[in-house]
Length: 316
Image (cartoon, rainbow, N blue to C red; front, side):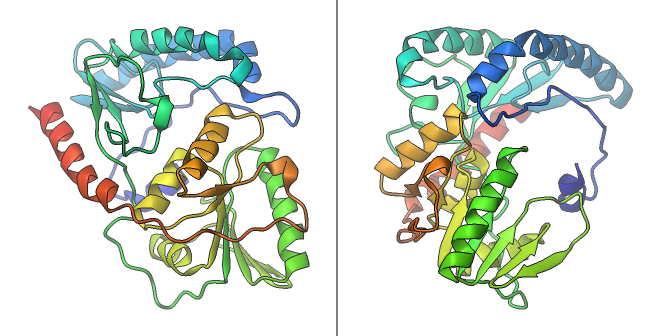
Protein backbone atom coordinates (compact mmCIF):
# COMPACT_ATOMS: atom_id res chain seq x y z
CA UNK A 1 0.00 0.00 0.00
CA UNK A 2 2.89 2.38 0.73
CA UNK A 3 4.20 1.72 -2.78
CA UNK A 4 0.80 2.29 -4.41
CA UNK A 5 0.15 5.50 -2.46
CA UNK A 6 3.34 6.93 -3.96
CA UNK A 7 2.52 5.74 -7.49
CA UNK A 8 -1.23 6.56 -7.66
CA UNK A 9 -1.65 9.58 -5.43
CA UNK A 10 -5.17 10.49 -6.59
CA UNK A 11 -6.76 7.16 -5.63
CA UNK A 12 -8.81 6.30 -2.55
CA UNK A 13 -7.25 3.46 -0.56
CA UNK A 14 -9.07 0.89 1.56
CA UNK A 15 -7.20 -1.43 3.91
CA UNK A 16 -8.31 -4.90 2.81
CA UNK A 17 -6.21 -7.63 4.50
CA UNK A 18 -6.22 -11.12 3.04
CA UNK A 19 -4.50 -14.49 3.25
CA UNK A 20 -0.79 -14.01 3.96
CA UNK A 21 1.50 -16.48 2.20
CA UNK A 22 4.41 -17.54 4.39
CA UNK A 23 7.64 -19.24 3.38
CA UNK A 24 9.65 -21.90 5.13
CA UNK A 25 13.39 -22.44 5.27
CA UNK A 26 12.84 -26.14 4.63
CA UNK A 27 9.38 -27.09 3.29
CA UNK A 28 8.34 -26.51 -0.37
CA UNK A 29 5.75 -23.77 -0.85
CA UNK A 30 3.01 -26.05 -2.21
CA UNK A 31 3.12 -28.09 1.03
CA UNK A 32 2.77 -24.90 3.11
CA UNK A 33 -0.29 -23.85 1.07
CA UNK A 34 -1.81 -27.34 1.36
CA UNK A 35 -1.42 -27.30 5.14
CA UNK A 36 -2.98 -23.84 5.33
CA UNK A 37 -5.84 -24.53 2.88
CA UNK A 38 -8.55 -24.31 5.61
CA UNK A 39 -7.28 -20.84 6.53
CA UNK A 40 -7.19 -19.87 2.84
CA UNK A 41 -10.82 -20.99 2.41
CA UNK A 42 -11.83 -18.92 5.44
CA UNK A 43 -10.20 -15.80 3.96
CA UNK A 44 -11.90 -16.39 0.59
CA UNK A 45 -15.33 -16.45 2.27
CA UNK A 46 -14.45 -13.44 4.44
CA UNK A 47 -13.17 -11.24 1.59
CA UNK A 48 -16.18 -12.14 -0.58
CA UNK A 49 -18.47 -10.89 2.21
CA UNK A 50 -16.40 -7.74 2.82
CA UNK A 51 -16.45 -6.90 -0.88
CA UNK A 52 -20.25 -6.71 -0.83
CA UNK A 53 -20.08 -3.99 1.83
CA UNK A 54 -17.37 -2.07 -0.06
CA UNK A 55 -19.41 -2.14 -3.28
CA UNK A 56 -22.43 -0.68 -1.46
CA UNK A 57 -20.45 1.93 0.48
CA UNK A 58 -18.38 3.23 -2.45
CA UNK A 59 -20.86 2.57 -5.32
CA UNK A 60 -18.33 0.40 -7.14
CA UNK A 61 -18.99 -0.43 -10.83
CA UNK A 62 -16.04 -2.73 -11.60
CA UNK A 63 -13.77 -4.82 -9.40
CA UNK A 64 -10.38 -5.97 -10.70
CA UNK A 65 -8.85 -8.67 -8.51
CA UNK A 66 -5.12 -9.28 -8.63
CA UNK A 67 -5.33 -13.03 -8.05
CA UNK A 68 -7.57 -12.73 -4.96
CA UNK A 69 -10.02 -15.56 -5.33
CA UNK A 70 -13.01 -14.24 -3.36
CA UNK A 71 -13.48 -10.86 -5.09
CA UNK A 72 -16.30 -11.78 -7.47
CA UNK A 73 -19.83 -10.37 -7.35
CA UNK A 74 -22.83 -11.26 -9.50
CA UNK A 75 -24.25 -7.73 -9.38
CA UNK A 76 -21.39 -5.90 -11.15
CA UNK A 77 -18.51 -6.62 -13.53
CA UNK A 78 -15.57 -8.36 -11.92
CA UNK A 79 -12.18 -9.25 -13.40
CA UNK A 80 -9.71 -11.86 -12.16
CA UNK A 81 -6.06 -11.26 -13.12
CA UNK A 82 -3.64 -14.19 -13.08
CA UNK A 83 -0.76 -15.71 -15.03
CA UNK A 84 -1.24 -19.09 -13.36
CA UNK A 85 -4.20 -20.99 -14.78
CA UNK A 86 -2.14 -24.12 -14.12
CA UNK A 87 -0.39 -24.41 -10.75
CA UNK A 88 2.97 -26.13 -11.46
CA UNK A 89 3.74 -29.17 -9.33
CA UNK A 90 7.12 -30.88 -8.93
CA UNK A 91 7.69 -33.45 -11.68
CA UNK A 92 6.73 -36.54 -9.60
CA UNK A 93 3.33 -34.97 -8.85
CA UNK A 94 2.49 -33.37 -12.19
CA UNK A 95 -0.29 -35.89 -12.76
CA UNK A 96 -2.21 -33.97 -10.05
CA UNK A 97 -2.07 -30.63 -11.86
CA UNK A 98 -5.43 -31.25 -13.54
CA UNK A 99 -7.07 -30.82 -10.12
CA UNK A 100 -5.73 -27.28 -9.84
CA UNK A 101 -6.79 -26.52 -13.42
CA UNK A 102 -10.38 -27.56 -12.63
CA UNK A 103 -10.43 -25.52 -9.42
CA UNK A 104 -9.13 -22.49 -11.33
CA UNK A 105 -11.82 -22.97 -13.98
CA UNK A 106 -14.53 -22.98 -11.31
CA UNK A 107 -13.14 -19.78 -9.78
CA UNK A 108 -12.71 -17.96 -13.10
CA UNK A 109 -16.26 -18.75 -14.22
CA UNK A 110 -17.57 -16.69 -11.29
CA UNK A 111 -15.95 -13.57 -12.79
CA UNK A 112 -17.08 -11.57 -15.81
CA UNK A 113 -13.60 -11.80 -17.34
CA UNK A 114 -10.19 -13.26 -16.60
CA UNK A 115 -7.22 -11.16 -17.75
CA UNK A 116 -3.93 -12.99 -18.36
CA UNK A 117 -0.89 -10.64 -18.63
CA UNK A 118 0.79 -12.45 -21.51
CA UNK A 119 0.42 -13.25 -25.21
CA UNK A 120 -1.71 -16.14 -26.39
CA UNK A 121 0.54 -17.54 -29.13
CA UNK A 122 3.86 -19.36 -29.22
CA UNK A 123 5.67 -16.12 -28.30
CA UNK A 124 4.85 -15.85 -24.59
CA UNK A 125 6.34 -15.62 -21.10
CA UNK A 126 4.16 -17.85 -18.93
CA UNK A 127 4.57 -21.07 -20.93
CA UNK A 128 2.62 -24.04 -19.60
CA UNK A 129 1.18 -21.92 -16.76
CA UNK A 130 -1.41 -20.56 -19.23
CA UNK A 131 -0.81 -22.50 -22.45
CA UNK A 132 -1.30 -26.06 -23.66
CA UNK A 133 -4.79 -26.77 -22.27
CA UNK A 134 -8.37 -25.61 -22.83
CA UNK A 135 -9.07 -22.21 -21.25
CA UNK A 136 -12.39 -20.90 -19.91
CA UNK A 137 -14.31 -18.82 -22.45
CA UNK A 138 -13.95 -15.57 -20.49
CA UNK A 139 -10.11 -15.61 -20.52
CA UNK A 140 -8.47 -12.71 -22.39
CA UNK A 141 -4.73 -12.32 -22.99
CA UNK A 142 -3.85 -8.66 -22.38
CA UNK A 143 -0.12 -8.58 -23.17
CA UNK A 144 2.61 -7.92 -20.63
CA UNK A 145 2.09 -5.17 -18.07
CA UNK A 146 4.92 -2.92 -16.91
CA UNK A 147 4.98 0.36 -15.01
CA UNK A 148 8.41 1.03 -16.55
CA UNK A 149 7.22 1.35 -20.15
CA UNK A 150 7.27 4.84 -21.64
CA UNK A 151 9.39 6.41 -18.88
CA UNK A 152 12.88 7.84 -19.09
CA UNK A 153 15.71 7.36 -16.61
CA UNK A 154 16.89 10.04 -14.20
CA UNK A 155 20.36 11.20 -15.26
CA UNK A 156 21.12 12.41 -11.73
CA UNK A 157 21.14 8.89 -10.32
CA UNK A 158 24.38 6.92 -10.69
CA UNK A 159 24.26 3.14 -10.83
CA UNK A 160 26.77 0.41 -10.09
CA UNK A 161 27.87 -2.30 -12.47
CA UNK A 162 25.59 -4.81 -10.75
CA UNK A 163 21.95 -4.35 -9.70
CA UNK A 164 20.34 -6.74 -7.22
CA UNK A 165 16.56 -6.54 -6.75
CA UNK A 166 15.34 -8.26 -3.58
CA UNK A 167 11.70 -9.27 -3.20
CA UNK A 168 9.42 -11.75 -1.49
CA UNK A 169 8.72 -12.58 2.15
CA UNK A 170 11.09 -13.64 4.88
CA UNK A 171 13.13 -15.64 5.62
CA UNK A 172 14.04 -16.25 1.97
CA UNK A 173 14.68 -12.55 1.25
CA UNK A 174 17.35 -12.31 3.96
CA UNK A 175 18.90 -15.65 2.96
CA UNK A 176 19.35 -14.41 -0.60
CA UNK A 177 20.69 -11.04 0.56
CA UNK A 178 23.36 -12.72 2.70
CA UNK A 179 24.46 -15.04 -0.11
CA UNK A 180 24.59 -12.28 -2.76
CA UNK A 181 26.43 -9.92 -0.41
CA UNK A 182 29.18 -12.52 0.12
CA UNK A 183 29.53 -13.03 -3.64
CA UNK A 184 29.71 -9.31 -4.40
CA UNK A 185 32.24 -8.65 -1.61
CA UNK A 186 34.47 -11.52 -2.72
CA UNK A 187 34.33 -10.54 -6.41
CA UNK A 188 34.66 -6.81 -5.70
CA UNK A 189 32.04 -5.70 -8.24
CA UNK A 190 30.48 -2.23 -7.68
CA UNK A 191 26.85 -3.01 -6.89
CA UNK A 192 23.50 -1.55 -5.87
CA UNK A 193 21.16 -3.73 -3.79
CA UNK A 194 17.55 -2.55 -3.91
CA UNK A 195 15.82 -4.04 -0.88
CA UNK A 196 12.27 -3.42 -2.09
CA UNK A 197 10.91 -1.90 1.13
CA UNK A 198 8.80 1.12 0.06
CA UNK A 199 7.14 1.31 3.48
CA UNK A 200 10.44 2.35 5.07
CA UNK A 201 12.25 5.66 4.85
CA UNK A 202 14.41 6.32 1.79
CA UNK A 203 17.75 5.27 3.26
CA UNK A 204 21.17 4.50 1.89
CA UNK A 205 23.94 2.45 3.47
CA UNK A 206 27.27 1.21 2.14
CA UNK A 207 29.43 -1.85 2.67
CA UNK A 208 32.73 -1.65 0.75
CA UNK A 209 31.72 -1.93 -2.94
CA UNK A 210 27.95 -2.29 -2.23
CA UNK A 211 25.33 0.46 -1.87
CA UNK A 212 21.98 -0.49 -0.29
CA UNK A 213 18.67 1.31 -0.84
CA UNK A 214 15.35 0.57 0.86
CA UNK A 215 13.59 1.72 -2.31
CA UNK A 216 14.05 4.01 -5.31
CA UNK A 217 11.84 6.29 -7.36
CA UNK A 218 10.40 5.08 -10.65
CA UNK A 219 12.96 6.94 -12.78
CA UNK A 220 15.84 5.82 -10.58
CA UNK A 221 14.68 2.20 -10.86
CA UNK A 222 14.57 2.47 -14.66
CA UNK A 223 18.07 3.95 -14.79
CA UNK A 224 19.35 1.22 -12.47
CA UNK A 225 17.93 -1.54 -14.70
CA UNK A 226 18.93 0.06 -17.99
CA UNK A 227 22.52 0.90 -17.13
CA UNK A 228 23.69 -1.96 -14.91
CA UNK A 229 25.86 -4.54 -16.64
CA UNK A 230 24.53 -7.30 -14.37
CA UNK A 231 20.99 -7.69 -12.98
CA UNK A 232 20.11 -10.27 -10.33
CA UNK A 233 16.50 -10.81 -9.25
CA UNK A 234 13.84 -13.30 -8.26
CA UNK A 235 11.82 -14.60 -11.24
CA UNK A 236 8.59 -13.07 -9.98
CA UNK A 237 6.27 -12.56 -12.93
CA UNK A 238 6.07 -8.78 -12.46
CA UNK A 239 9.88 -8.52 -12.39
CA UNK A 240 10.13 -10.56 -15.59
CA UNK A 241 7.54 -8.39 -17.40
CA UNK A 242 9.36 -5.21 -16.36
CA UNK A 243 12.72 -6.51 -17.56
CA UNK A 244 11.20 -7.61 -20.88
CA UNK A 245 9.66 -4.15 -21.33
CA UNK A 246 13.17 -2.67 -21.00
CA UNK A 247 14.73 -5.38 -23.22
CA UNK A 248 16.99 -6.45 -20.34
CA UNK A 249 18.02 -9.91 -19.24
CA UNK A 250 18.98 -11.01 -15.73
CA UNK A 251 20.30 -13.80 -13.55
CA UNK A 252 17.17 -15.36 -12.02
CA UNK A 253 17.31 -16.97 -8.56
CA UNK A 254 13.96 -18.62 -7.76
CA UNK A 255 12.64 -18.70 -4.22
CA UNK A 256 13.33 -22.15 -2.81
CA UNK A 257 10.25 -24.37 -2.98
CA UNK A 258 8.14 -21.89 -4.99
CA UNK A 259 7.32 -24.03 -8.01
CA UNK A 260 6.03 -21.13 -10.14
CA UNK A 261 9.34 -19.25 -9.90
CA UNK A 262 11.32 -22.43 -10.41
CA UNK A 263 9.35 -23.21 -13.56
CA UNK A 264 9.64 -19.65 -14.97
CA UNK A 265 13.40 -19.58 -14.34
CA UNK A 266 13.85 -22.92 -16.10
CA UNK A 267 11.51 -22.13 -19.00
CA UNK A 268 12.90 -18.66 -19.76
CA UNK A 269 16.48 -19.91 -19.46
CA UNK A 270 15.77 -22.61 -22.06
CA UNK A 271 14.51 -19.88 -24.40
CA UNK A 272 17.84 -18.09 -23.99
CA UNK A 273 16.23 -14.96 -22.56
CA UNK A 274 17.60 -15.27 -19.01
CA UNK A 275 20.12 -17.24 -16.96
CA UNK A 276 19.13 -18.99 -13.73
CA UNK A 277 20.80 -20.57 -10.73
CA UNK A 278 19.35 -22.29 -7.67
CA UNK A 279 19.71 -20.37 -4.41
CA UNK A 280 21.31 -23.43 -2.80
CA UNK A 281 24.05 -23.40 -5.47
CA UNK A 282 25.18 -19.84 -4.77
CA UNK A 283 28.72 -19.48 -3.47
CA UNK A 284 31.65 -17.09 -3.85
CA UNK A 285 32.63 -18.65 -7.17
CA UNK A 286 29.20 -18.33 -8.80
CA UNK A 287 29.24 -16.69 -12.25
CA UNK A 288 26.75 -13.82 -11.96
CA UNK A 289 27.21 -12.40 -15.45
CA UNK A 290 23.99 -11.51 -17.29
CA UNK A 291 23.48 -12.60 -20.90
CA UNK A 292 22.94 -10.13 -23.75
CA UNK A 293 19.84 -7.86 -23.75
CA UNK A 294 16.60 -9.38 -25.01
CA UNK A 295 15.08 -8.36 -28.33
CA UNK A 296 11.41 -8.61 -27.35
CA UNK A 297 9.87 -6.26 -29.92
CA UNK A 298 7.10 -8.73 -30.79
CA UNK A 299 5.95 -8.89 -27.18
CA UNK A 300 6.20 -5.16 -26.50
CA UNK A 301 4.48 -4.16 -29.75
CA UNK A 302 1.50 -6.51 -29.44
CA UNK A 303 0.89 -5.96 -25.72
CA UNK A 304 -0.74 -2.46 -25.92
CA UNK A 305 -3.12 -3.69 -28.64
CA UNK A 306 -4.23 -6.68 -26.56
CA UNK A 307 -4.73 -4.53 -23.46
CA UNK A 308 -6.77 -1.90 -25.30
CA UNK A 309 -9.01 -4.59 -26.81
CA UNK A 310 -9.63 -6.23 -23.42
CA UNK A 311 -10.36 -2.93 -21.68
CA UNK A 312 -12.77 -1.94 -24.43
CA UNK A 313 -14.68 -5.19 -23.87
CA UNK A 314 -14.71 -4.60 -20.11
CA UNK A 315 -16.03 -1.04 -20.43
CA UNK A 316 -18.76 -1.77 -23.00
